[in-house]
Image (cartoon, helix red, strand yellow):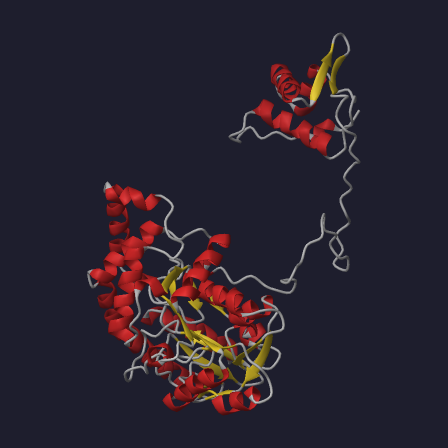
Length: 487
């Protein structure tokens, strides 16, 4: 007889009744091949004694097995595994060995074999992050109030039905007005698709623009997830140098004379990761090149709203008269990362194609949430939030940079960023950022190890150090921990 005492374990505190637990245990033994068709099961009395439960509970379990078609009762002989079941080979658990390659049950294409999922910062108390907003400043209560209010209204019930994959018409109109007032970008609501953050916009644009082996120009230093998105589309990434004036457009022009480029991906405001801003001279030249060589410009303007010392340059999309620019923005980056709201602007045909593609992976967004955000835009709540946050983030930037200068003068080289939510910090070559990250975590501080910013052409010993999400006391504590580790 099988060692049922160890094979069948019951939990008296579980929400599942005991007889169902026993029944499920037998089903597992049958499906993994431990029990074969026509095998006899132990009598109810013996099994009850072995696993320490009431005999009637075992009888109920056997009745359930029989009713589900896993077992059959033979008069005067007992209960057996159903003889008509197909024979299954016994599952043998492989011996764990780090040198063994895992054997998949089926063949599939894995383009993410070496990928590492992003850190879960929801579990982190103290963090020097990548440059995220302080969610405590966001008027979430106002947003949720509007969300609840809409859901209770009679007309609001319509928002619970299937809607447009382009997103809430109300929010698209609000975003259209917001882009006109803040960026001088005059577009119709029909030229806008609401996305789940800027990353969805990058993905949709890449899938529509790029065929396998197409060339796309990106910065030598660049947003890693954008690189991965273009590589997933099987495009060739052509690296272009980035200096204190942004992407080197003269170098790009040299490439264009020898190779055909389908698109250029660019972050002209607060370049990721280095935070530099592209000069107006280079912006205009890039637009001229796009017109001459007929390539698309994917403009990722993820944090336009946070510029501290002077007015930001207008986006390329605002001065593009030849319709070469696909403009991507994010509300998540300025409000709260978990509330996935972004937008993409382009020609009507391109946006409608993006909406059709979006339906294949995500029929639509959260229409109620989008409607609630639209109300916040219309009521001026979002503008008030931006103004308040901008003032606070500027103070935090100044304090953060002051501490870096006074406490890390020999270890960290940086420039005070004109905008954005992070400081690009280059560490002394003697400092091992991987070890720093590991040691910091032991002391209750999350800080990245710099690997996310590296690629085949860029491997600087540097980090984006976010200041916006840290209050003064938290900033002092976090940088204090870092100081003790680095020193």
